Image (cartoon, rainbow over all chains, first blue to last red; front, side, top):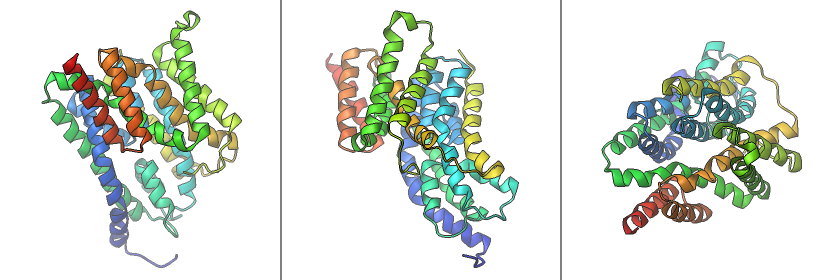
Length: 239
Length: 100
C-alpha cells in the first residue's frame, strides 16, 4: 500500500486499465456523433459536446433537448438531474484518493470520472494516485471524443433517406440503456413505467398543457425516481 | 431556441460540478437511503420520460417508428449492445420506409 511507485509507471498502469473502457466507448460515441449530426448539429459541435461532457445519459438527454429547441433552464436542469449520481461515485472515490493529491490535481482528474472509470478505480487496492487517475481517464476521453468525430463526419456525408431513419437512433440508445436493468430489477421497471405514465398524463391532459416539454421530463423523472426511492430504497447503490 | 454553444457549456458545467465537488471540496458521505436510491434511479426515469412517447414521432412516420421501437425493445430485451439496438432500429425504419 505504501510502496513508492514512480509516476510514469503509475500512469501507464492506469492507462492500461483504461484501454478496455476506451474500446467500449468507441462504438457508443460513434453512434452519438451520427445522431447529433442527423438532428442538425454541426460535426464540430457534436465533438465538442463529447469532449466537454464526457458522459452518456446526461449528454444524450441534453442534446435531445437542444435539438427540440428547449430553453437553457430545462436543458441544464435535466442534465444536472441525470448527473448528480456522479456525486455518489466521487464521494466513494474520494475515500481512496492519495491524500497527497493537490487541490488542482483533484480538479483535473475528477473531470474524467464516469460510470466505467469509477468502477475500474473502485476495484483497485490501496490509494489512487494522481498519475494513475490521469492514465486511467486519458484513453476513455480520447476514445469518446474520437468516436464522436468519426460518427459525426461520416454522417455529414450520408444520403438523406438514411438520415431520416437515423432519427430513431437516440431513442433506441435510450431503450438499450433502460431495458436490461428493467429486466433485472422490478423497482427500475416500475419507476420507468411511472415516469412514462406521468409524461403521458402531462402531455395529453388539457390541464397540464402549460408545462413545456423540458419541464415535463424533469417533473416526470423526479416524481418517478422519488416514488421509487420511497417505495424501494435500494440496498446496493454503488453499482 | 437557445444558443447551442451556451447550452453545451451549461451541460458541461452541471456534469463537472457533481464529479469535482466531493473529491476537491467536501468529502462527506451521503447516508440517507432515500437520496442514494433516488440518485440511482433518476437516470432511468429521465431516459424513460424522454423516450416515450417522443420515439413514435422521431422518423416522420408513426408506423415505421412503431416498428423501429418494437425492434429496439426486443433487441434490448435480449441484452444486445447499445450499438446493435440503435442499428437494428435504424435499419428497420429505413427498410420499412422504402416499402411504404
